[in-house]
Length: 274
Image 1: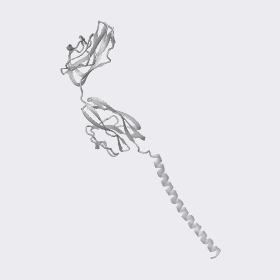
Image 2: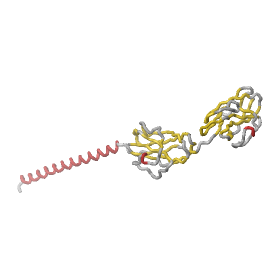
Image 3: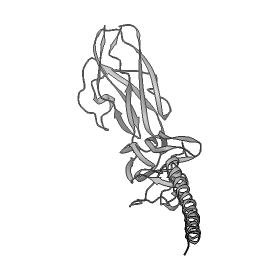
Image 4: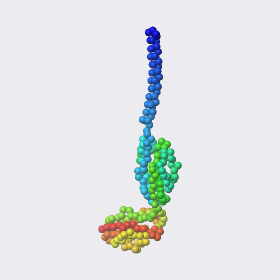
């Protein structure tokens, strides 16, 4: 084999290597582009690590009153259209997956404050719902984020029956003899009509807790605010009555109402009339 033949063979080998290396480089560049694209997608796509957390909720409420719930949604920034507290009288135990929709649960009611709108999360929410029927309620907080359902664990609260109650508002501690003294009190509970409520007072204390059978005549209170002592009053209602006390001294008083033939009293208060 002469020098020219050897030269041609080497030229052919170099040319083949160049072509082979060319395809290797092209294939490598494609691989790098694919890897780079996936890396950028992972880098710029927010992770879906969302979480719904209950912050505060009542353990019990009285029927007819409002239950207030506080919760937050954490995770990467986005906008959602729905989050709510779902509740009912039947427990839904276990862990809820991202595919569990509210309509697939046994919860029959929900807090409506943020059930429909646009809310930029992360964010904390405060919602309210009025609960009328006494009983045990089970509930979870839910949020729909990127078409997935995020839930808290299940909690419970008790709705207690309504009871009648008389309470004094800002009890008077001092007053001037001969001046008009305003008293403010409330009668709460299931709606009905009463015929008597008042503030009974006197210079002699009637201490302790007064039962439902203790009438004003059974106490040592000798006078009363006359504004609502007789009539028809639809409760629950707040009352404001006035009395003029001419004699100085230490007076003891309670607010009182007759409801269904029973006597409801507040605790005893003390007022100095000077």
